[in-house]
Amino acid sequence: MTENNGGKYRRVSGEAVEYEVFARKTRVEPLHQVGSVVAPDDDLAAAYARATYDEERWIEMTIVRADHVISLWSPGES
Amino acid sequence: MSELTNLVLSIADNKQMLGLRYAEWATRAPSLEADIAAAAMGLDDLGHSRVLYGCLDPLGDDPRGPERESDAASLSALPYFDAPWTSWGQFVAANAILDTAFSVMIEACVNGSVEVLQHRLRKMLNEERYHFMHGRSWLRSGIDAKPLDEAWREALEWFGPPDGDTAKLHREGALSLGPGELRARLEERLETTAPKLDLSWKGWDAKRRRTSPGAIDEQTFAMLRGLEEKRFAPAAKPA
Image 1 (cartoon, rainbow over the protein chains, first blue to last red):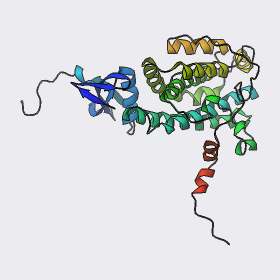
Image 2: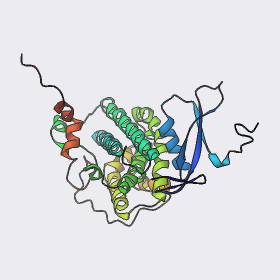
Image 3: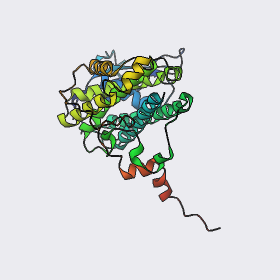
């Protein structure tokens, strides 16, 4: 059903991309990555993130397109 | 105000059926994320139906009678939910059109003059935001016209005839929107206009808020009453 093609996924709903999901439980802790979802647009990504990661009592949740994240270095490159 | 309790019961019955039909797709949707979303939205709507049923007593005129235990046709859900959906397009049309129609009506209750509805239903609208985003996105990816037209027809009928109980509740202030405004609000939210439909109120059942007879399938009705569960229970020991 899903085929990864250089960061893009071919789904029944068309092209889809990966979104990273960030959340936190209290105001004093920073947002941290809790997982990712694959969706063709921001609306569906938000709905999927909320449905998939809503088990905990988060006070904040955000999503970011994975291809909008600028990597400075990766493991083994520092 | 029996018109209001009938309306609230209809929202509750429809949300219950919507939740059950969503849940039936929790392992049949086109992707794992969509499976999970179907399960989550199903849980949300079943929870919403519990809250709505809980409003009937404080409203002072609970219209539920014993017939609901034996007659599936006494429930006030739309024909769209009478049988399990057989295509993803039916799921999407229900998610985008009917779920949003119920939200628009709930919004009219929250912004109306009845305190218990103002307070208890507000939280639902926050959760419904994600149902709307899910439905709108899938709708944009394109589905067959048939389930879409069917969902639009049933949503517009469910809002009620121009001179019916919804209009009366609007005049009295219990609802902030009448049938025409509800339709306009639904079209505005979905950023489209309803297809050209020839609505006829000939068979309109004001209590069940539908124009055609019929009822939910036998197995779903048995499951709602717990009979399906009893089927699997160990036989009682003789006294």
